[in-house]
Length: 162
Ligand SMILES: CC(C)(COP(=O)(O)OP(=O)(O)OC[C@H]1O[C@@H](n2cnc3c(N)ncnc32)[C@H](O)[C@@H]1OP(=O)(O)O)[C@@H](O)C(=O)NCCC(=O)NCCS
Image (cartoon, rainbow, N blue to C red; front, side):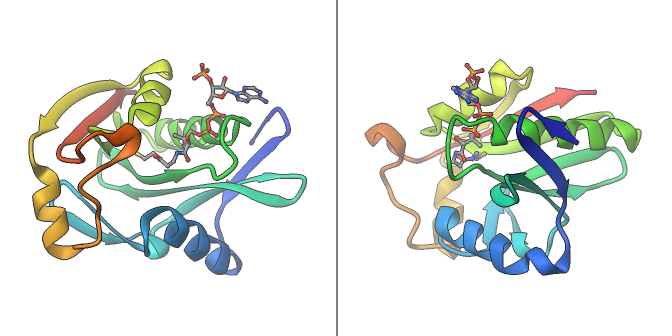
């Protein structure tokens, strides 16, 4: 699917280097931990956003019987529409698959993501105070201070009912 000049497609094996590069740049590696679950995001199914044939963003996801969890979403060149195109494609994919819920975890400091998701219909449905303590047991390099100098402490669950 395409939105404006951004084209979104499913990732293939040939995208592995780009996938690993984006994950490592954004998250310090391909291992992502949220709600107590550890994923190797590089091995998850993924959507790639492209502009003029160049990779402009990545969304990795995990499917269960009834839900699509967005595990990571990254648009390295911000505010150019790649994030919206990827999220829209994931919502379409979930709907086409007959799923009833798209959800994800973000952190208390990620005000840009909270704005982005709420502007696109997702709602905050749970807050897990101090969830980052558990993440740091496995990823000690996760900083104490997050975006905007905010203490990085809590996980927020956002969802879109489909
Ligand atoms: C959150 C994130 C994925 C959003 O992606 P993005 O590509 O910047 O998002 P978009 O460009 O689609 O939309 C962001 C804003 O830019 C605006 N925008 C999009 N294209 C634009 C353009 N060509 N010119 C000006 N503004 C534009 C959008 O309208 C939107 O504003 P709105 O929310 O008021 O509607 C991105 O900021 C990111 O990678 N963050 C770091 C990783 C992260 O925190 N991920 C989420 C973890 S859960």
